[in-house]
Image 1 (cartoon, one colour):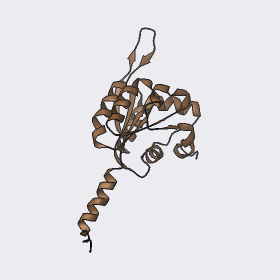
Image 2 (cartoon, rainbow, N blue to C red; image 1 turned 45 degrees about the vertical axis):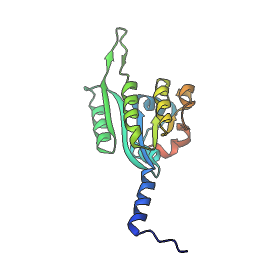
Image 3 (cartoon, rainbow, N blue to C red; image 1 turned 90 degrees about the vertical axis):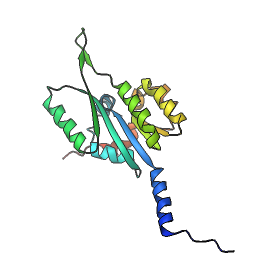
Image 4 (cartoon, rainbow, N blue to C red; image 1 turned 30 degrees about the vertical axis):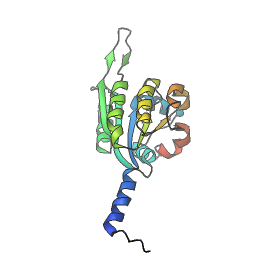
Amino acid sequence: MQVPRQPESSRGKRRQSQEERNRVAIFIDGANLFYAAMQLNVEIDYAKLLRCLTKDRQLIRAYFYTACDSGNDKQQGFLLWMSRNGYRVITKELIQFPDGSKKANLDIEIAVDMLTLARHCDTIVLLSGDGDLAYAVNSIAYQGVQVEVVSLSSMTSDSLINVVDSYTDLVEIKEEIQRKKE
């Protein structure tokens, strides 16, 4: 008994569907990464970071969430560079509190975007240690999507680590993602 060979086009489709099973979306909490980089005393190379987090998977989308100070020209230039180099930049204006402190919380935006995009990808990479995102991450994991968290261990909530499929300490990839001194 002879098994018929599959036509070439069918093999191509199988290979394509295998690639589709490696679809990844990346969500970066800019403030969390900024403070982690300060603690590590490293300047992040965002092109290298994107390659490191994507690995050999098909990138669906990379989001970068950050507070925005429209009067800060240096920050505006950085955000423009990010948007032109593979990142979808999500900003929120800083709110000043009576004590003089400023903050822009983007947890809801991150959670909503992760939940929305989860059905289009196989893996979600979250670069944040914020425990407020644990519930959304757990919900995504229940949908059958792999969730990876990358963050500095000293800044990562145990509740977040407990619901992810894999955790990577930024210390482990520091050399791969840092900007080389010229």
